[in-house]
Length: 308
Image 1 (tube, helix red, strand yellow):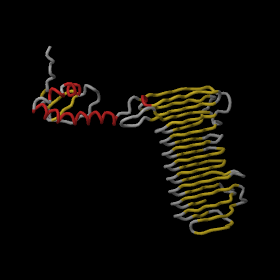
Image 2: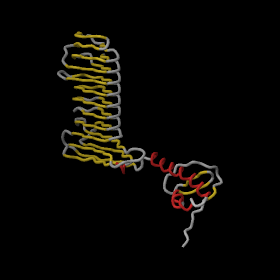
Image 3: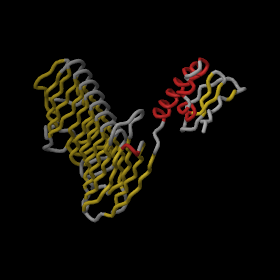
Image 4: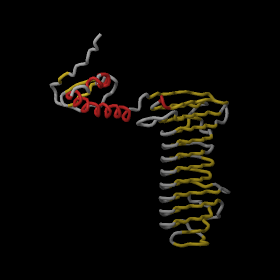
């Protein structure tokens, strides 16, 4: 039985370049219209004629371009997850994701709600599980992808007494109004902490750090971004704020009591508080503010440091 050859149909409309959205999308080029299936199935036969070769050579680049655009421009499939866990005691919330923001806010009940938006869900593994009063949320990339990478954005509400361990490889982190401290890591993103009490550790390789209305001890590090801190450093605490490229601005309460050691390789170091100076220069300042009940070290390789 002879194989029926698909027919190239004339298109009276002006020629357009269109991105194909599925296997049967139409491709238009130089007034001709052909489906992606037809282009593939008839390729060898079409090459037998000089006209066919010309048409195929014109259509195939468009076919490849359209396929690539499909892959590059799509985040599908997208999945939404929403789970709630009941808890009875102090909660440890352990979150590890990638390519997405983590947002954590306090809840008014003894429950933890985890909402996740998963993009390119076919290329990642996701789980949210409870182990007693410990809640673990994990998202990991699987396989390889062409085009946009998969991502997992997580939004959580939990009791304000929860201990927070938050990690994302590429995304911002935002935490508000918790009482048991936090450990935060991101390789590329801004970190915002507001109304936290306890021990705070923050590290980002590329992004600013902003901490406001804080009480406790703070260890803040970024390799490229500014640090802004507002709060109270408790007696006996050791605090460290470092950036390799950016300014460090530290706003303390009126009763500030610290031993301060600040230096920068390119910029100035200054204090608006009266300070008993032990060593000073344009780019470094050491001394005691108040009674010196807490220790504070501030470093920048390219930016000014201000205590006020």
